[in-house]
Length: 382
Image 1 (cartoon, rainbow, N blue to C red):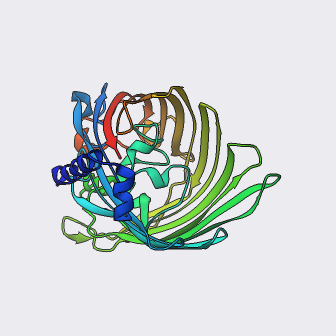
Image 2 (image 1 turned 45 degrees about the vertical axis):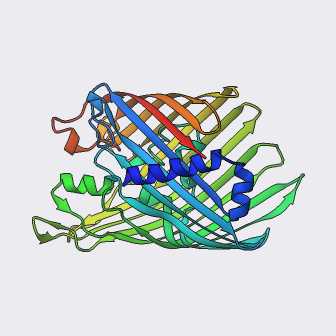
Image 3 (image 1 turned 90 degrees about the vertical axis):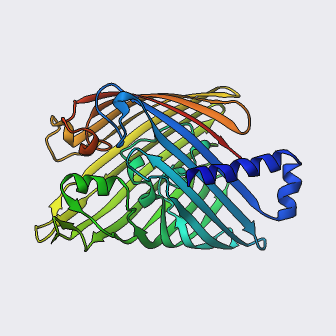
């Protein structure tokens, strides 16, 4: 199926390249975009993100094709098909990432409904488009690659707008959202349960939240915060055929900041997440998680961008000497844009700890405390 999606993207690129692309899309009255990427993972010891990365793995492919149309100046519709595979995750099934109708009454108020992207944090809404950001892997404590399908979008709606736009006070932008999230059949949560012998079955639940940002009077400086509440259940989960319903309830409280000036971008986010989880008739377990990162990118050349970040996440009330309870990540990254269509990323990670991204299915002999990881990513977009 991935080949079908890539063939469709390549065919469209060829058609557009053969003529004036602006006139082509203007005649169709459509906005069409696509992205495809192939990644490689090499790690020193532990296998990461359900791949056999310690032997070198190319099981990391990603592709999307989106179409949008402005019906009127205020009314717009769009949809995106997506296919990915990351080790044991995804398995290249083509899914509908999002499909929405959007009506913007004015700058203060708009409504988006359907299967819509969830506005939460600096990067959540762009996780599905590798071409638009610097990083091969975003900070995993906040944007885990093994649960992208769950966190990216929800079925429901978003209301949005801005207020107080002025040079002296800046602009407040708000988005409030709510609806239902489905648990993908092949994601990290399912793999974790499967390692314990639990077959999860169909899962999901209601979710809602708010994201507020202040574009300050200082040019390029943004501050913001968000709150989300998520309930997910799998009532048909079982172990060896015996019913064992799974329930997870958590909230997310996040603050963020970003400063862009010239060739430099500085970003940071901090989040705390009280998590309550239970299986079967067992009482809920309380496991609060805290995550944060600081990030710097620098455009050294029109085609070359360099970057680095440090991220830290973990169960902060648990034993911090136990690597299972935390994950620290020191990252250096580079991105090279060959032209408007093709790009490459090379990224090194030094991972200390095992909380997140490590699965027993590909680490049957247990885990080492530290992991050195090299990522290469090649892609094109239009």
